[in-house]
Amino acid sequence: MSRIIVSGVGKGMGCNVSKLLKSSGHEIAIISRGETGANVAREIGAHYASCDLMNFEETSKTISDLTGKLGGLDAVVHLAGGFFGNRKLEDVEPSYFSSALNNNASTFYNVVKGSLSNFSKEGGSVVVISAARNVYLNSHAGYAAGKGAIDYMVKLLAHELAPRNIRVNAVSPGFISKENCGKADFQDKLAKEGRHDAKYVSEAVRMFIENQIATGQLLEIDGGFSSLVPSGL
Image (cartoon, rainbow, N blue to C red; front, side):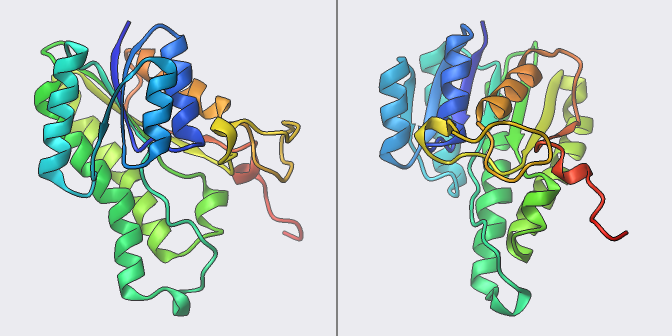
């Protein structure tokens, strides 16, 4: 059993990840700003805290408090981000670009840095949600910058934290259902349009938490879209 903090829980992937990890026998604490995270925590019997992940001091204190309630910290799963939207560069204002970048990259930085002193000497695992290519290529510069920053931070932090036995990996989903705890009516087929069920993302997150030698990896879970060659080439 691992003691896991899941940050940035919403009604799609975050809900699904939390439930799957809890049902797998792990002890869970949830961080969110909305009622969804609190409701999920009550439903699955997890610890809960409301926190502004853009504020480092608040994030660090919240993680320390939850680590105390869990009796230790073995893994952190970070899902906060957002600001996806199909916009051309001329429609992305500087303030919007900064918000998209910070809500993705800065929250990840805050959570990882705030977690470091709470991991035991045995180390632990950090898993962050990034984005598959077919997602960020359909978004805008701020979103791509935020997810790109996450990807490079994963590579650097995996290298830097390996001596402390802290593994750092990213799951990069394609288009995933945002409602009903990530459950999708879409029939899951490869290279088909539609939003896939979040359970496939949750299973990848669990794998990275439980795999003791995987680190520095960016795993796309997107139904094969990012591997396709555009027609006409």
